[in-house]
Figure 1 (cartoon, rainbow, N blue to C red):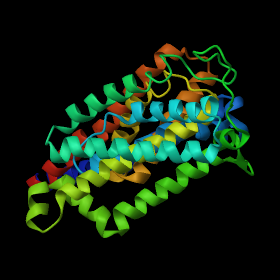
Figure 2: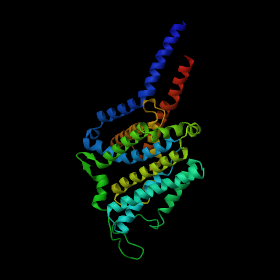
Figure 3: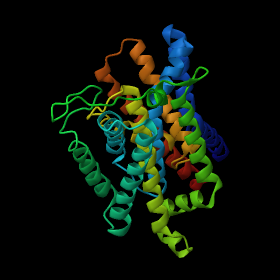
Figure 4: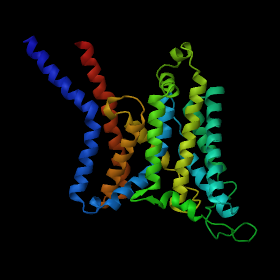
Length: 343
């Protein structure tokens, strides 16, 4: 009898282990195949690459969230940082009539400075990461409105002195989002390169492994001689830097300095980073899991939009996907570990 119970428990463990490791990948494949089979427009290659292009902003921002999670934190200011990038790039080119390279440089430097501010608040002043980045989020959202007097920046806009803005979004800047290498948009190529870079950094370098160690057990890491403050600071600087890159793509996409840009980016980015922890039962933030999470979100939202699903119901679907990922990450894996300890 006991042998039969052990056999049934063993089968249950195998099934659960399979679900924990490959369940989310199966969900992604099933979703993609379902929409591919039922929606003619979804089968078009242009739809596929457009989906990837519009997903790239969330995915790159999600990589930044993933890095902050790797050290045991969470950066809530990424959406505001991306919005700042949109406004700053618009002001540089439209109001001050500077070339695209200047706008890109200023945005990336501003992103690094925001990351340094977050690191100072969290690491030096020892303010909890959620509170510190929440405060910086509101500060950035407010500060970006000051130089533009709360108005969106667009080509040909009327200035405060009655003159017309002298500049415009240059063609070179607009190609950040609209340009393609063959059928593949530049934004998608950038997303893939950054994903590979983050994967190599976290898994193949001493710095990346140290960041994981800090996130797992900062006290033990400190005793092992790891500079915990340095690696936590680095994570928040990289997070803001990646958010500023997302903002550049977003600015290139909308072609104006929309003051509301980036406001909804935070929740989607957190979602894809959390979803990424469930992939292959890794149970920790990782680059490829984040990319897959973003891809699944893109597939589901694109498929539902083509099918005529109302936009106001899409957040419900995003929440359901996130809940499913959390089940794979925590509930099933916890049961798995209990089974192993019982055996």
